[in-house]
Image 1 (cartoon, rainbow, N blue to C red):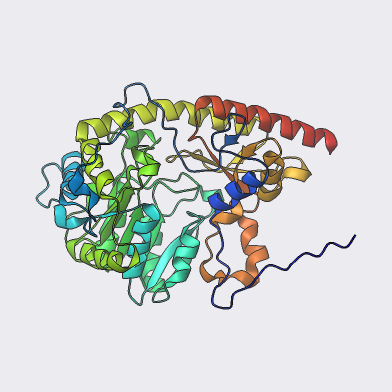
Image 2 (image 1 turned 90 degrees about the vertical axis):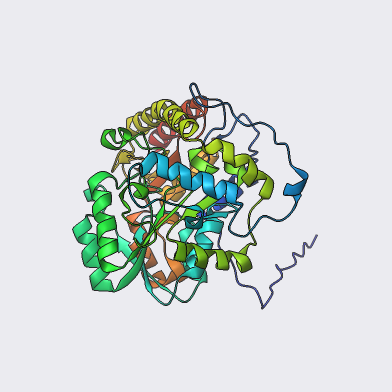
Length: 432
């Protein structure tokens, strides 16, 4: 019997839009039967922290009461009460006693981290924008869509623990004519964290050379370096800004990771007033603003003492999971270039595993068969517009052996995933 398969339709007006790494891996997992509610799956791929009550943390918010007035649209820049709470939080925790203080005009609210990043990208001019390899997967398409600026990749070396000194930053800015640099700090995926005096030097260089430093600080409360943990467990560029309206420092953060409320899609940008005006104007045509009821509910979550209590609880509980995952991956043969200094990820190389699973994509697919989700390293080789596509085979070789493993899920899920990974590696070794 003949089976005729209709070809997929094509539409001339639309291009193929790639999925980010996390969306790709969860889509592949769903094809294997993955359901987020299913107890038998271990999702070490998605960047989502567990939402359960943690010892010592403030009570979790489980219900919202919506004021009828909050059924209206929120202002594009966010409601003033939340903007004031965010400015106050930064001033009280990081800028106490400093003459220059953040105000409502230094804060804009967005409906999610990608929305905040998109607003910033849309507000950039005809410039060279530096970005690092590896870095957050969603940057690739973000840096491709807006054509005014030119993305300039900066390679980080695993042999050096992904370090990048202030002197190297100065050289790159001057040599490549960069007017802005975008980076996640702590870094997603490597966990490398720029903090303390080094971060102060970065900001001084940005100030001196008029190069805007755009810090994605969504993991800034997951800090594992002892010297940075001593600063209340939070590493942020806000500590080292001299003049909040003149220093070219842009900070992005939100409830997503650091307060463990990803579903709220409530995020913010903190920057000089002039930059906030520009990104708010961009928001007026890009997204129109975030949820007013959720912004209202977020105000009470941002009390300084509650924020510090949440951060202490994160450090205590996630620190245990960090060590468990780090030790477990090393025990089965993974190589870790740098134990994570921040985030809730371990960036590990499969190069010394059995040949059938010694690269990121083959391990990812084999792990799916055991209901474990990971993210292959190729997705973090940020290549806007595939400008390096002709060298893809060579370029991606830097990360094709790597995977990103999340210890965002519960300890029980991390332990179950490690048990399954041990079985996978043992079976691959026997088969080889």
